[in-house]
Length: 166
Ligand code: AMP
Ligand code: ZN
Image (spheres, protein in one colour):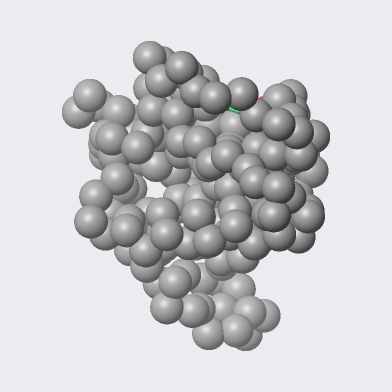
């Protein structure tokens, strides 16, 4: 567990460094407060010699545009894209740019980030016209919870009647 918690992202750090360089070179506006929080969180999780997990992380690769994805939203802090294997007519993943492996790695500092993930999913549900009918938001944690990609992501599912859980 300790290794996983400390497994941070040289990829995410490179992403942050790239954005800061663009700011320093005058190509990007002053980083927002939210971006500063992302920088802090990313650097807090900066490599301690075991960044293999993040280097192999497909969602970090999507964040860094090293892998393609069907993007539906992006800002300094979050990215959202259509799931490659949709389980419903609407199946979007809302993903923080910072590499956070599981829900177990969240702490008080992430409260705002998690809130903004939910609000982004709400906005995307409205944009896709499923807000009135209803939708489901899911965060799977670890293998027992069905997590297969170890970079947290919020599933937004809707567009059909979803079965009751359990
Ligand atoms: P989870 O099982 O909660 O970890 O969810 C991982 C989700 O990521 C699954 O629904 C996959 O279909 C989806 N997924 C995996 N690889 C990609 C990808 N390259 N682009 C979009 N979605 C992906
Ligand atoms: Zn990652």
